[in-house]
Length: 361
Image 1 (cartoon, rainbow, N blue to C red):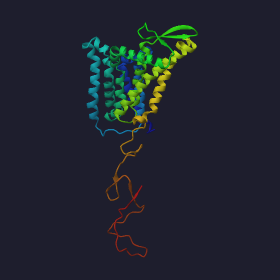
Image 2 (cartoon, helix red, strand yellow):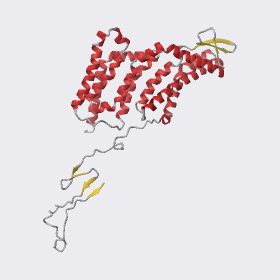
Image 3 (cartoon, rainbow, N blue to C red):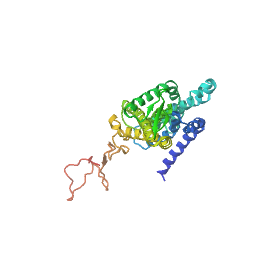
Image 4 (cartoon, rainbow, N blue to C red):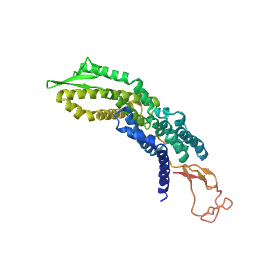
């Protein structure tokens, strides 16, 4: 029963944080969930809160180091200003920032502040430090960087993908670019009948890149290694996802040329994107050691996974002994040095010294 009480207490406090977050950010989280059904790169942002909860569970079950902070006053000093800042952003900025508040989605920018402050107040700064990466991962749900990319660089990115696709078609001639178009139309011939397929911006690979940013950043929070290695791994994964997207388009062209437009568009196209993306993620997980990264859990400071608490205790002469020693005591009362223990023939030994020896565990 005593072991279940701490677990129930943790669950109750976690429910308090979850309930407070849902109450304060119910509209913001609802907009993310509704976006999952959209065919845009922003659709994957709805997975960020769910993945963040999974990361919290993973981090909570792994051994960890934590700062030596035992003062609840420090928890309140750090946590309450974070919660107050987040609530001020939710209540004050919509009045003064007007439409820019929702255009820039500053509500989602304040979400990590609220969650981190709530954890510091309810659980303490030590737990917040251990969960710093899952909390910071909530910033991935902020859509403004993605919107800026799609506004400023979407056209250039699509043109680059189409140029690479035309270059690949010189090596694998499964389709013919339509010269009179903007470069996004490709002609295929099946059984003597020609049809045209279009590679739109959504098929240029930007959706896969956005999905890998969401998934790859989550992996980067739980792997061990240097920051440079994680950044290189993320960059390599994005490049691989982009190359696999070109392979996906070529496969669709091949199926359309071999079995027709229906087989390519209605048969292969709906699931080939998910298949190539999953293959890319699996490949990047397998090459983690090449970037000096690993999925091993973080060891505690003393190098053991489950280290027993080191509590020194008093020896039989009042001297403090180390954690690896234990005092040797006899079951019978110990005679004082002034009264030496007699031998078997009734005489006392020549000299007696107090026994201060110990045995090593």
